Amino acid sequence: MSWTPVALPAPAPNQAYLDVSALDGGRLACPAWMILSGVPMTSSERLEVPSLGFLLSHSASGKKVVYALGMPRLEDLSTLPGFETFAHIYLGDEGKVSPLRLFTFESDGCVHDSLKKGGVQPEEVDVVVISHLHWDHVGDARPFTEAEFILGSGAKGITNGEDPQTQSPVVIHVSAPAKRTRFIENWETSIGGLKAHDFFGDGSVHVLDTTGHLGGHIAFLARTSLDGSWILLVGDTVHHMSILHGECDFACHDNGHGGVLCMHRDPEMARDTIRKLKALVDMPRAQLQIANVNADEGFYLPVKFAPVT
Image 1 (cartoon, rainbow, N blue to C red):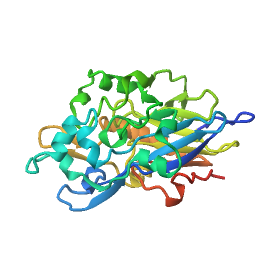
Image 2 (cartoon, rainbow, N blue to C red):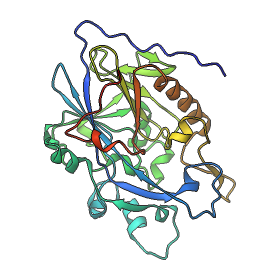
Image 3 (tube, rainbow, N blue to C red):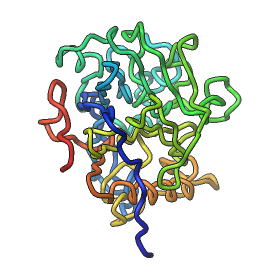
Image 4 (cartoon, rainbow, N blue to C red):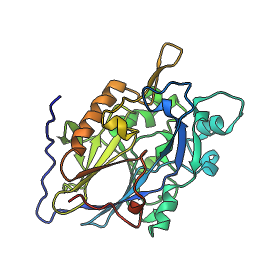
């Protein structure tokens, strides 16, 4: 298949941009067969998986945006709104068999603690963007008392209970405060074949509709300099760099009940979205950070990602 370059928006005079830092959102381990194709379900291989958040600071307005809230702390699971079913299964009867028990907490970091360590208080955050409503990316919204919460339009059916995915214990549909939640529904343009919304209206950051994994999944494409460097922040659209680079597919298994066990709700749509993301990050001066892939230690708040030159 031939490679087609993606036209990234050109910078405007006095272009606004964002300083971007990684945030520790905790770390899980899970069986490799859940993520990577070609690994048999009998394998004992496990992958350590972080769940990063990111702080973005807008150069023109000074507004602070957090993309993705990572995991809640293990000690908070039983008290968090919306986590009742998840906590009952994960923390309940140890003899009960559940796929959730295949995940183990490897570290108990959380985004709001990571912010504080970097010199930013959660109540100073203006906007929280939730990539999607799976338990390991919604974190703990309670410390963000002044923030507007942003979700993709496809998440509306989950939050109002109309989407059947609401019944899944890993989908936390009431994690964001309803009175301060806004859904991105005006996709006024497209970038690389993905529906896009110019978040600040100045070309500094675009919300991308990255469907396939879960309804309403969104990514953030942010400028990191005046003259045209970019970073693409992605939640669970892709879980591993080998999948992004086409070295292997994501895992899909027969669940034994006539269905498919897969991390993605719509595998074909997820593959199409991954192909489009790969074309974006192959562009000059673009870099990628996946929430489930380790960031270099030098990029955590208060340090920021260096623009690609």
